[in-house]
Length: 426
Image 1 (tube, rainbow, N blue to C red):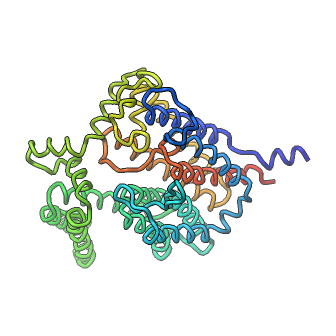
Image 2 (tube, one colour):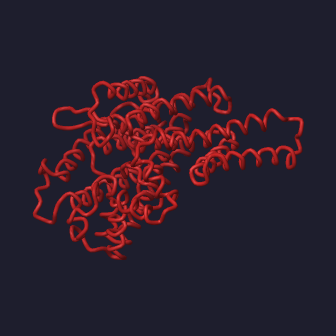
């Protein structure tokens, strides 16, 4: 009996240890970023490090709950969990709290809950459920459209709440679809669309449209030599032109001023060097201070709670979106490399386990977890280092926030539970 119980509760402790290292190291950096170097009271609920510690304690309860539920529950009730999550996103339009320009939170007592953080694992479950259905063929166009709609619904709802950063995360599901067998042409089309979108902003819409149309017709008539297939190149050209002018319209009429400025600065769309420098100073304060903080840490760092820019509050939102700058200043290149290595190891471990799964549902869900974590990790660190435009998304398990920590914990530990079901099968 003892051996049976031991086998039944066997878990992948490598993944769990990586998770614990990230959460604990993240809390140390939140402590530095939200204090001013004075003596701290760890459970001070007036400070963010105190609140985060309480969030971590509740996380342990959440982990126990997730692991105690039968693994089949997540597959059986995936659709219901997804529907409940979408209803919570819809409810924000009526009951949501407006914070920092976005209506993404419910105010419950003295705390706020962000449903978009929980929508990620709900969407991952729904995608895994649909793709693993025996009647689903991901190579069939009809099923590709249905699967895409599962992802697009929460993405659109979150975008309408003016949370562009969280919306972009849903692009990570493309990697999942690609792993499950969608044609390679979609990857090529995606890259072409990205090039057209950037080109339409950088070189204007009309020259980009003319260039794209010319290349399409040259490809069909001179390279592939299919002169009789006139309808196909015309259709692709019309779609390309629509995309090019659509991106311009979205950039000028849909995006808010600060979002336009970030893209303008990233692509250097402003030709006047004086105006460009003024724009850089006005909208890149966070980024400039973040880069200075990281650079000042050099190789070894200044030491825990010894970062002058961190304790001096030079970097706004340093315990949330810019938490990595705290690592760079106080722990230096060595500590920053350690954080990157931990994330890479975690993501690779999840991918490795996903490939070991015996059910397609568990494999698809595992790839969804890895893709979402990679997207957050890549975007957040790239943003802090100035490699990509500023996009407000947290660093998983690291940034301050109860919703973020709980959402990522649910995302990860549901997969750990699914994997334990594989390990403990007779």
